[in-house]
Length: 268
Ligand SMILES: *[C@@H]1O[C@H](CO)[C@@H](O)[C@H](O)[C@H]1NC(C)=O
Ligand SMILES: *[C@@H]1O[C@H](CO)[C@@H](O)[C@H](O)[C@H]1NC(C)=O
View (cartoon, rainbow, N blue to C red):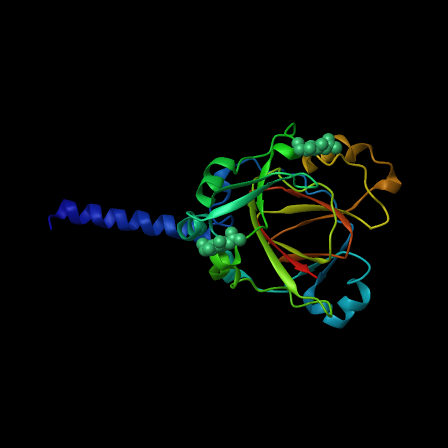
């Protein structure tokens, strides 16, 4: 092999290794390359945030499980799962699989099937404030467990289960500014693997004012600033390494501040 050829093979290796390192070692796993348009306002956090080491499972059951939301730090270590969820790894392993997208409105009317690669390359865009939830396609849940098992099996489920429930996972990836408007269901945990997610919550007996086809972003810009003090939500922004617990039937809306990879554990 001539010197020039050897040098170019070597350069290529250096570049490849460099790209691989960048991708798994950048704080965003390559996801923010999709869009630089993160939202900056994390808002306040007026729910309890605790280190998992300071709250036992029993204390969780007594103080939170049936009565109020909570953010726990360091409950699980999902660094291995996080590596598997880098943009390049997900595209390489799962790019060809078909995923089912839902419209991001309260009752999720429309479902669309696309290859995961197309979703990442074409649909994963920052959300404009004027878009309707019923026009925004979002990948979260409806996961085919047999196809995604290799990934989902790596996820460490929050160990603070509720008695007599079993858990089901929903995995998703979505652009900055997207989110699900107010809705409710059974209890569970939500975790971001990449990106930040802002949460808004109300107890079951305090139905918030919102339009089911508008996005969380438009609610935040148009309704939230005018809420009287006694209608203010509970809220908090979660980051990787934190898990948010939502109790049964609590109203909640979410807003992805960055392009985000996230997973929820539903208990039923
Ligand atoms: C899940 O994926 C498998 C394997 O590709 C396929 O046979 C099955 O029909 C899929 N299930 C659903 C509910 O789409
Ligand atoms: C929301 O959008 C869906 C689908 O476009 C439509 O069927 C429904 O009537 C709309 N709901 C409201 C309250 O506007």
